[in-house]
Amino acid sequence: GIDGVWIRNNNSGNTAYGAALHINSGTTGSSHILFGDYNDADIGKISYHNDGNKMQFVTNESVAMTILSDQKVGIGTSGPDVPLHVSTDITTSSFTGASADWQAKFTNTRADEDNGGGSYIGLNTARTGENMGIVWDSKNDSDAKFVLWDFNNNSSPGARIAINNTGKVGI
Image (cartoon, rainbow, N blue to C red):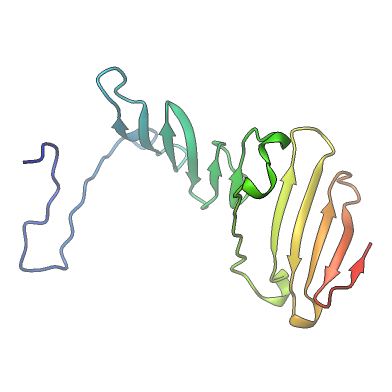
């Protein structure tokens, strides 16, 4: 047999019934599911913090991912301030050309004309004045364009290069 804790729906005649595990804490407390071994009982965990209404995933005793109540997700940061906030210490030597396999997908679910209908990726560094953005602006099919934005001067950010849907480049 298999040792462990089982949560089971004993009403086998009705498949609509589910099974649940409830872990409750006080309104400002936290609930945890711990993972570990004999030497380190909580090296990994899933936590829900009621005081901030956020869920955190911990690996090797460090917060790896945080999900806030407004659906912002942080990987490598416990305080995401955009829908997907990834923070890591990548160096330029990490990119090795064809052998690097970096993939990401960003979808703007508000594809109405007033909201731009495009997607935005912010490229920031820890150094002041080194912030760029890549935008796919597709308000309509005739105006679709790829734009590289410069946010180095927050008082006058602007498009630095644009490529429209016919391949014309504007600088």
